[in-house]
Amino acid sequence: MFNGNDKEILKAFGEEVKSSGKYPLVVSTWPFLEAVRAAWRTVDSGLSAMDAVVEGCSACEELRCDGTVGPGGSPDENGETTMDAMIMNGVTMEVGAVAAMRYVSDGIKAARLVMQHTKHTMLVGEQASVFAISMGLPGPTNLSSEESIDKWIKWKENKCQPNFRKNVLPVDDCGPYHAMNAVNLGENICTNSNWLDCGKLGSCHINLHNHDTISMAVIDKMGHIAVGTSTNGATFKIPGRVGDGPIAGSSAYADSEVGACGATGDGDIMMRFLPCYQVVESMRLGMEPKRAAEDAISRIARKYPDFVGAIFAVNKNGVHAGACHGWTFQYSVRSPDMEDVKVYTVVPEIPTP
Image 1: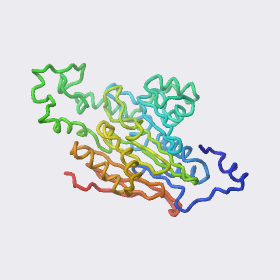
Image 2 (image 1 turned 135 degrees about the horizontal axis):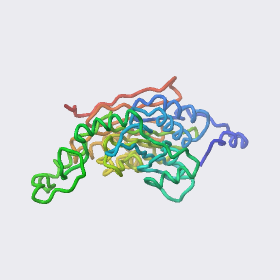
Image 3 (image 1 turned 180 degrees about the vertical axis):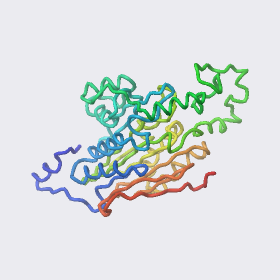
Image 4 (image 1 turned 120 degrees about the vertical axis):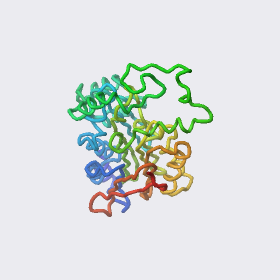
């Protein structure tokens, strides 16, 4: 695996690092322009794809992209903001991730520390925070902001609606909650005849403004690929909830022999399908990125017609495309033939109401 000294090492062996014309390349969900620029500056200077992913996602965390990445956004039912993040090396297939991490704002850096300093793939909760701080990251710190607390107070005043509970009492008020018994459940029980309707509950509270992820892929000058993600999850999620953000194969996946994928949307549904793993494996079998992305989205939509989500796919040659369902999706790209970041817009194949 190459690091920040790659350029000097290769020069010493008489191998100047040069762009192939298609490399380096940075692709990210949404118009997170400053994050893509940060990643581009890093990888264009000759540093590794891993370094660039960390810089790009860190920039988004610091800027609190869309209020759903980094500290200060997406409070849970208790008003607390927590972090999910993941990084994957497409050369070694190593993964580092943190989930439901409290008190530490540097999600992507913590994920890389898991990869670098443990034999594990993921650490969770407060113990992830203890680990990250022990490895030198700042903390403990309050990840809430005035905006997130104000949002949470208004939600409480609205009787904790909407929320992610189902088949519980009270139905239209704040907890404590308890399960309905079989008599009270009635038509709310998922049976073979209505299981699709039950599944529709998943995305009803998900939209661009309350749930979003930066998922970024970088191909460096050596053609090595890395991906990373960071998010603070769904707004008003049940405490302890972990979405697809830190799950390799769901929010992102990379294999330098094939390409990479990034995803965003209703993670509770999307993680059931590992769409980014599906995309990369489809490209391995010869699918072009556009077809691979559309195929992965359609697999989810067949089971959950009302789900909201999107994917970008990029192959090892730098060819990229996107697909979405339930919303219009934008993803950002920076390549050697561009003077600045370019934003691509993808519309769902089936118009939504």
